[in-house]
Image (tube, rainbow, N blue to C red):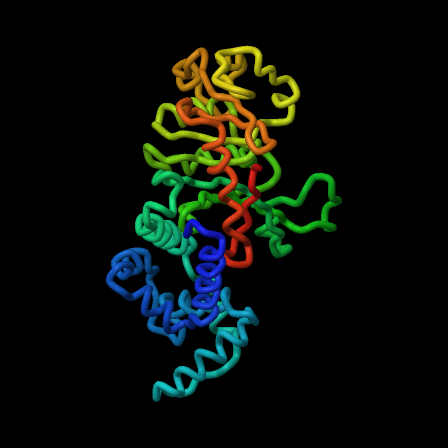
Length: 336
């Protein structure tokens, strides 16, 4: 994003206006353009040439999501009008065929294209859009209510606090987002109940999305001992809000003092191995880990980087406020 607040607002308005003006033809041209065509053809499922082939169906679906109306009827009516204007035979305006075609879209194709497009956008972001020319990646999670079907209940069970048949399936989602461009780089979904349903588990499956030199910015759910060790091993700096329990026991007089409310502390390896971790990886984890603990802008934070002043990291942590759910389609919670 641009450096000044006014430029940021103008840029967000341009992005929103461009999104509102996009239609299925515009998305179809993008999907069949030189940058995405090879990936689209690789992931296309076997299909017959029907009224709504996969590429055209995905184009209509993208336009439908961004449409203020958001209904299947509007998506089909728009397709019918474009066929008539283009001199093609008129088709039925019923939504059944389109809904069935949309249900046949492979999720792997959509996920792969999402990662590919996100990577392209992030790589094209100018250096000043990043924090001190270093890419910052946001990690955050959210939940969503799903349709109450037997299939969804089996994969995404409702909360145990609700009686059977009285609740809806709930899906947990964790996303990695480029702070500079607002592009979603990767996302993972899982249930909200049971083993492997927490945000930490979903994040571990996406760590390969990060690159050496990146900065991972997140809230207090994420900075566990083993995640910090993994980030250090990969050459990635992490900045996280400190958990409430640790915050209450923080003593800045201990450890190696770097400044006011700023010091280095040594964390000891937990004695108990997490269920998700293999014994081999547990043994390979270092016995201790030196991290930085500081207070900036009224918030206690962790970071694995030790050379910059707390005021600099405070600026990095505050930048998620530049993006809003209205302009970019996702919500990020600033940690300051």
